[in-house]
Length: 283
Image (cartoon, rainbow, N blue to C red; front, side, top):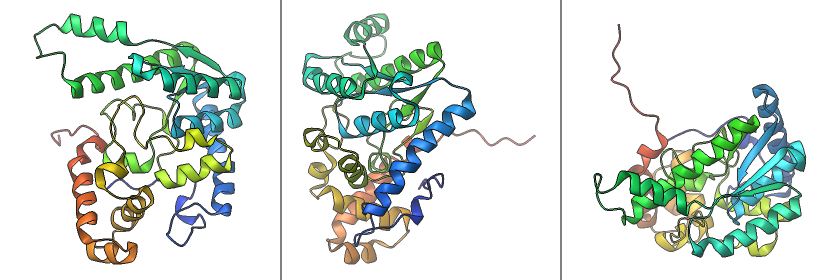
């Protein structure tokens, strides 16, 4: 599995009894180091601003808050990219977040773009009512919009996928992870929630589903029939620490069957975390 970044010395953070970085000391460290990471990223790239997609959920709200901490509100752009009427509630949340942070918020409705895309393709590539294909296309359209804005404003795109989503593959190839950095990519969902509480994100935001609100999918907790913190502990021990399935199950206090389900899920989605392979031809 992909190793965690060492940019914020994630393994050195003080941890709670469950092994997660949710202690006061860890959260203080993250509040200092994550904005510093963004500031350095922008400076090294010679960029002027940061672009963050806002969907009204925890991860995007935390990322936007940290971006403002790094550069100030005048150098952060929030992108609101709904596609259907069902996204209106989350868009109202996102607009309120942008207002509270004092950042520019550009709203681009993707339904006309998606419709034109599907019309252009026509029936040559199969039906256009395929939900998986539609959601994947929307994710990639959002990535394209974010980079268009970034390119025209000399900005960098901040990805908001957390480590739980990354390891479980709750993302689209060339979609959510199409970014200049994955700001929360070293932090499990439980750790992001704790960070959200520490920086004062409203409770109605922190109880949002653990999957991207645009996708309309069930949460990891519901699909795996386990609490989020339990899933995160299994991922940390079995995937990141390399402990065996039985040892992980005993330490977390769960049936080995749950560890096996999580491990299988990670294995099935491994292709999403890999760069495209090359033939390996050596001259």
